[in-house]
Image (cartoon, helix red, strand yellow):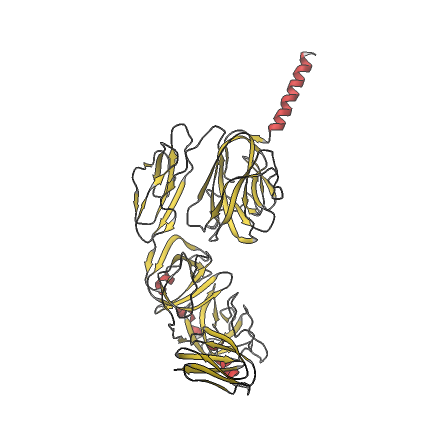
Amino acid sequence: MSKRIYSLKITTLALLLIALCSNIKAAKLSEGFESPSASSTTNNGASITYPSGIWWTNGITKPTNATPNDRSNGLYSMRMRGLAGPLNTLGMKFDKAGAGVLSFVYGSYSNHRGGKLWLEKSTTGADPAPTVTAGWEKVGDTITVGSWLGTHGVASYNINYSGNIRFRIVMKVTSDANTQVNIDDIEVTDYGVDQAATPQFSTVTSVCSAPQSVSLTSSTPGAAIYYTTDGSTPTTASALYSTPLQISATTTLKAIAAVAGKEDSRVNASALYFPIEVSTLSALQALIPTATTSATGSVYYKYTGEAIVTQSYKGTYYVVHLQDATGGFMVYDNLKNLTQTYAVGDKVTGFVGLLTNYYSLPEIYPYADFTKLSSGNTVTPKEITLSQLADNLLCLVKIKDLNFAEANGTIAFNPNTPYTISDATKAADAAAYVFKSPTGMTIDYQSKIIPAKSDVVCLVSRYTTKYELFSRNLQDITALVSAVKSTIAPTIPRIYSESSAIMLESAVTTDVSVYSTTGTEVISTTVTAGKSRIPMTKGLYVVKAGDTVAKVLVK
């Protein structure tokens, strides 16, 4: 064989090997998803080429950090969502030649709970698409991602594999688009290159009620820990940890571990929040951020006054309306942190959370349950006019002679439908104020015929510049109660009290509901024809039996 032919074969073989290996990365892998940027933020079921290689994305978007909702180190990160499907994956479509330690940072999107995710590896070059399960093996434990509290979590895995390997992150399917997690800064060290274990904090990110003594540890023997308390990224030139840190004000701790012969650890962080105490709801309203739909970032507030629940209901999220002597407020549990329920008339204190401006409506995202002081309290609605709505936002009020423009004797109230209103001080203006029940709230006056005019007890809400009023129950709308009373049928000739009980005399089987004066339904039952007795504690009640409504004082 001639040298020329031999050389040609060697060259051809080399080119073939280069082609075969072009999808294998040998150097340390680092990917922060900063480039390329995309004009569209949706990349479900797409392959995207980044500097590290081609990544498959499914059930994922690649957002900018234009709002605080996405958790990114830099401008971009990858957002995984718990959508329906076989799996939701973010994975490498290329192999790395050997792997030491894999790590990445994560945080829940917006104020959602993040759901669950885990890491998988393949040493057979398996496709990272969600329909492929063969060739993939789970690594380590499932990560449960909680609501965002201002710091990324850090995941780290000792892989220690010398051959070709690839990875994918898998998000548990929930069929809930609100389980979302941002993934950023994935790193894979080379095989044989170890890394110091990420420092751990004795007090993890939390809202604190007392000063904290925080210890820092690393499982790597002999590792030195360096830390910062101003939120900056620590280096080996930062403060060297030696004794527990005493923290008594809102602080973000960050730390790394370093030891000779190993790479420095990933940065870990712990944010400790000490709430600002506020004693009145009006003062709390004054503190909401100016920007619409933004929250107060990492600033937590604690209400130390005493407020009474004027309404609570569960739609997509749990909502509680509160009022004290100075004003009203709304608790919106989109973090799903509340485990207790709160009834109309409960007196509460001590709630902690983030303030937010939801299209000009003051809200607080609670961090935990309130302290319940007592039950059965009442709030007397303040009598106002439509011209005074701005001064009574989120308060329980009474408006006399409120006109409903849509009333024609046949149209009934429907859920989440705006109705044009006016009174002696304000002409009808559907762009300025309407009567409308909140989305997801079922109320007993829905399906009742809209009155032309009525005295109305209602809560004052707002969306941008439009005020939205809603009554809590049928008893809040005087004309509806009167209309029901005027249709008393002989089937219910008598509703009265006797010997610590409500008495009913009915000609037929009848559905009965008993309400407190605050509008809370305390009993729902069915009575048969004849005389029936419903035992009750002392108090004033509103009784609805069929189409008959009556107030009954039980002594």
